[in-house]
Image (cartoon, rainbow, N blue to C red):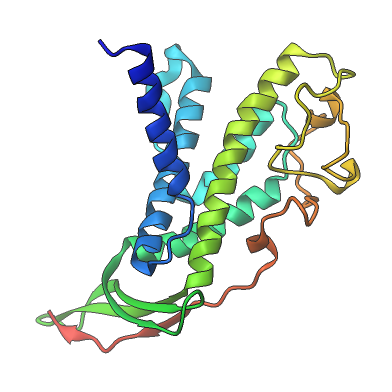
Length: 249
């Protein structure tokens, strides 16, 4: 059996690895792996949260989160916990990350890395679909996918933000259960990963527990202030996808 010091050292080591996983690598191939691993981390974080909320009686009913519905799942978790969150930003973040990650997950091979760091461009190839040309010949259609180093970093940043939001939904939910609405938020709100303009300056604002509560439904307005809003929400993206010639398979 491990001693308390050994256990503490073990968990600190895990925390260090997980923290470093969200520091964008200067090696672009490793950055791609960080995006792929980050998405898995996010999906498993949300799945564990749903599993825990469901309780022992319904543990077998929890299925793996659908990637297309991840933003909605987070909104639903917040709704069930009565936590006010920027639901539209959750959806936008999950959609953007998924758009980058899904093509990467189907990558056959890297074709080219062009430009200079930190604004390089990666071109890789994935399978688009399969089709029959006639009764005899079939084809595997492939296409090029181009993603920029900036897009990869933005996807990684957005992934970390959603993971933080997921964990903070649980924390805020506990606060709502334990404190009256007119009480000040214990510990302050300086680390809260989302923010609404009406709350004022996050660095100096003093909120009550009631401010964090969703009175009707999860907020659908993208009302997060620019300071608290991750940079990728206001960025524009361009994916260039060129179809490659079909070949006999």
